[in-house]
Image: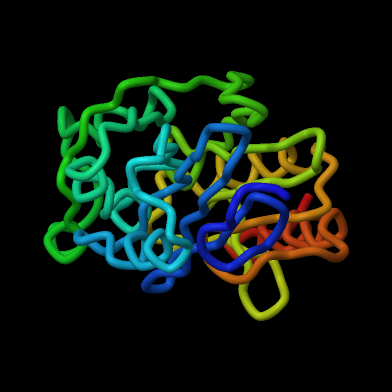
Amino acid sequence: MGPTTIGESVADGIGLIPGSFVNSYAYREGDETYLIDTGFSAKAKPIFRAFNAAHVPLAQVSKILLTHHHPDHMGGAAQVLKNVPAPVSCHGDDAPFVDGRVRRPGPFLMRLLMRAHPVPVAISLKDQDRVGSLLVVHAPGHTPGEVAFYLPARKILFSGDAVVERKGRLTFPAPKAATSLEQAVRSLARLRELDIELLLPGHGVPVTKDIASKIDDLIRRAPTEFLGRAAP
């Protein structure tokens, strides 16, 4: 029997932890438990509830992996770190925003309403790094250091906000919050190269069917829908 699933089971050893419009994931691999994103709640309540319901101590978290620096994905990290000294990893381009060295970009009101306490970054990730069986895929655009985490042997992608699900289609979240929509669109080509049978987005529901064709659809729609110009 495999390890207990933390959250809503979406695959062996992988649980979805739904929060306020954003998803976190608990991925268990051997003796390791990875927490992928920590949600919006500064008190990390969804995460604590999921671990308590699974009767798994939060202290079993061995690594915290952030797909990017936005508060809805790292908001609970400071609270989690109060309970377990797990190292935080994110891409090096987002690390200054995560650890507070650089002020997060965006309108003042948005920064005021969506605050997140800085946390120390123990490991700065780069493209093609490995974290256990996870492959780091740099997919910038939503933020400079946006990454997805890919399990090649199982064809599973934790896509963060590089691509999300809404009403059965793939799309981008909050286009106005993106650092560069042009770059985000270009990053879709990297995701399209991956063989994906289960896509676990930062927002929306897991996608299990027609993933390649849905990414192709977004690539076709993106120039007019997000960039305001005719596709070449």
